[in-house]
Image (cartoon, rainbow, N blue to C red; front, side):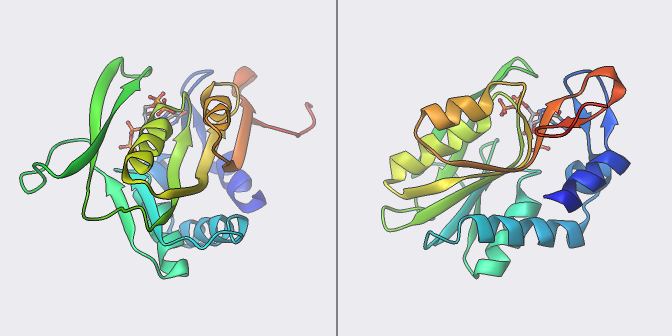
Length: 194
Ligand code: G4P
């Protein structure tokens, strides 16, 4: 998605050769016009499915997921990372290990909101090692829902996540695929090296 790649080129900051900071439009401040275009792109790429629900994970997945849900006119469910006061049992949950933070979190979704009658599109902001997305897949599978696929805003293709998800038999559509963050430059998949 060229518009997204251009935004990353203009506003993305390289924190290291592994981490791309996009706080100005995705992870802290949100660009709703860009998020709306991202939502449209997800809807178009998964138009071969009759999606009944969008499922994401708090917090940065919510903005792109909400836009896709708005365009499709379907509910958006976000997995919680912390147990809420009102969300006590009656839950699907999965363990998500973060290689970046070196910690495991339980993520959970109420059984009220996903069922075996749903076709779900799973959306997240970043795909790095794939653990968050695999956790969402696990939760969707527990519910018996059909998984249309995983929609990712920014995939870091030099990490293992995309391959792991495809190996699990789930389709991945990433709107910007980053090949490398080396030499102070964001290199996208399929782009000529200068
Ligand atoms: P994984 O789920 O793909 O295995 O990712 P990992 O554990 O490596 O990442 C942990 C957190 O860091 C996730 O956000 C993920 O989206 C984010 N992340 C990973 N790589 C990058 C990167 O290059 N840039 C940025 N900006 N974020 C990255 P989170 O902790 O769940 O945060 P949030 O959704 O609450 O914002």
